[in-house]
Image 1: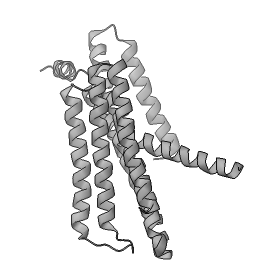
Image 2: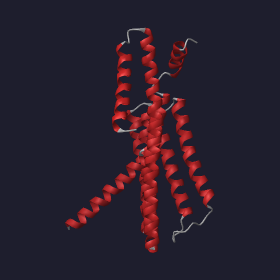
Image 3: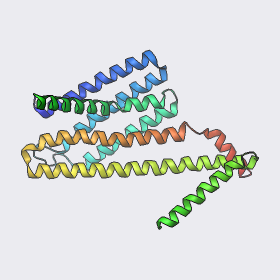
Image 4: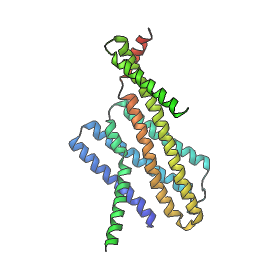
Length: 130
Length: 126
């Protein structure tokens, strides 16, 4: 596996681990709507991240040139955003999920990227110390 | 609009809002205050999501611009640049999603839309 694939694979794994930790923690200490919000938000953002990655990979080959049709790629991107917006709208207006829990769930990718950044900074600084 | 004019308009709006709250004892003033709240939420949502979309667009545009320039100058590093770009785009996009969630919360969760609607209808004499 190449370095760049390893990085994305690491983020994807971290996403699921963080979702599991947050879901378990909120189910133990918070209300059911909050837990549902965390899980729903996490699933939405993880799917969104995977589709974003797939779209960008389809859009650019290794040589940096467009591989597919431009219009289809742009339509796919807008469709993804509209779909995420619609799902969030339905979840919030439905009233079964806590909006704060949803916001926490939607932050899962941010948490995993921050985690990766902190870990790599720590690794770099410890290597420099040696 | 110059800075002075903008400041004047904002001050007038604040004074009007405070005046409507100060006369909250009166029934019509309560209705006016309710309308101001509704007005404020509508403005906040429109401006908020617009600014979030603007910032996200500028940020994503800059990221893609830099990534494409880097790839064009050094095609061998294209894969690494693309991976970093994907991570950056995910971070930028999450900001816009937060703004969308906050707008939905403002519109659908904070005000009692049914009560507000009745208030507006009554204040208009319907």
